[in-house]
Amino acid sequence: MRNVIFLFLTFITLNLFAQEVSIIPQPAYLKVESTKKPFTIDANTQIVIENDSLRNSASFLNDYLQKYFDLKLNITTIAQPKNFISLILNTRVSEFDNAYTLTTLENGISIIGTSRPGIFYGIQTLVQLFPSSKTSSLAIPAVNIIDYPRFNYRGMHLDVSRHFFDVAFIKQYIDYLALHKMNYFHWHLTDDHGWRIEIKKYPKLTEIGSWRDGSIIGLFPGQGNENIRYQVLPTEIKITPKDAVIKTDGIRYGGYYTQEQIKEVVDYAAQRYITIIPEIEMPAHSMAALAAYPEFGTEPNKKYQVAQSWGIFNKFNNVLQPTDTTFRFLEDVLTEVMALFPSKYIHIGGDEAAKVWWKQSPVSQQIMKANGIKTESELQSYFIRRIEKFVNSKGKTIIGWNEILQGGLAPNAVVMSWQGEKGGIEAAKQNHMAIMTPEDKVYFNHAQFVKEDSLTAGKPSTLLDVYNYEPIPAELNAEQAKYIWGGQGCLWSEYITNPAKVEYMLFPRLDALSEILWSQKEKRNYIDFQNRLKAQFKRYDLMGISYSKRYLENYKN
Image 1: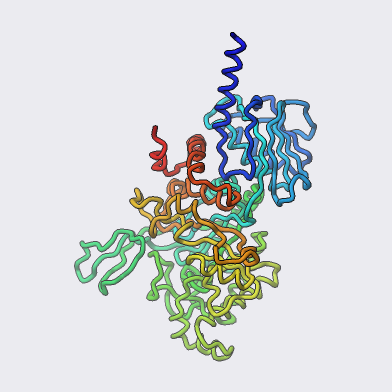
Image 2 (image 1 turned 90 degrees about the vertical axis):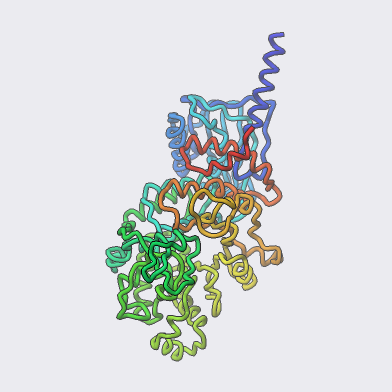
């Protein structure tokens, strides 16, 4: 009878483990070996690496264990017969790039990767097999996992111009991306509202351009009726009454990253197999640069200011003048930027350039005439192509928002499609790589709910909207679809002033994004995804992440 009870309890325990295997993003193949006992990680477990090239991934695992479970393991290159976590590099284990296998053995755990990133991704999966509360030993269910990414570009963006986030939080943000198997971080470093990267040849970019004299608090009627507000921090600023006045808080705001800090962050990301793509905006979104160096604008005698209000206003937002002097300035800036970022890709913006400034500028019109340029859209193309030629000469490739298609696409450019999918489709049909980041689906500064608890921008992009998004448009044929490099989420910071709000807007939509970019399309199932989120929320509680807890209402009872 005692044996029957033991077998029954063992069966119940193993089935509980089977139910607790909740991995996001969903692996390509997952089998829970319900008849096998779990393997327990304790203080005597050793992390066995094949050679020092895998020490980086082993250290990441050890740091995670120490931070959340007060458990520090020995890392060794000497194979152990039992109680081990082995990390092995074997390019023949799969035909797919950055693939891995994870197997729970009787005496240990084996992670085999086709590359060092593959092994690192296997570790992110192992982390999700850990308990979601602190314990001295970690029982890992018996599983057999084979996994690999669907898209080669799995990106997430962060705007640090509207609101600045310090190095410590940027590292934390990178950790969040790593845990979700993302491999690109798009760092939006410059815009109208603040220049955030030190450029030694042009010190005024940070001395002047990194600070603004206030931030918008609302729109008010003018002409003595200032006690009446039209809107408070509106999601889309539209000044319709002619006497409307933008009011700011008058508080000086700013900050920037030194080049040493940039190097520190780049190295931190590289240890997590994340490539940082810096963005230096041009020819528009350049008010911070023009406040520092007005000679590069279309009104060189004007005193420009770092923008204090969100949105695009032709009245305030000037653009760079496409002169040889301006291009030398930009080449100098990009030279310093490219020296800091090993990334093959440099994002140069290219969006929302108000053509009115070039149209009314005699200098711009003369440049157009001298180069046989008929329209201001073609002048934008001239601008982008000239920058691309310089960037290409340094062995790099430009990425631009979909407006770089205007007037003709630069020969080697990658298009980031944010105004729906049209730009990405057009780029793919022209045999250009495209990254899909449509605003209505994957802009995480948009509300998560129809009735949002906090101030946000734009119409809602719900968890379901994100999860149901398919990065490869249906109208592309198989050959054209190969040019869809992947997708990206964007987080603009107009209404995001602190790290807790970043986390609230990011989670759990980042989980959905990671699954549509990593997991195979046929594996996606929203109901199953919601069930797996239960375990993820507990993990976020353990990690102290301020995710949107309104989703917990779905799991009551």
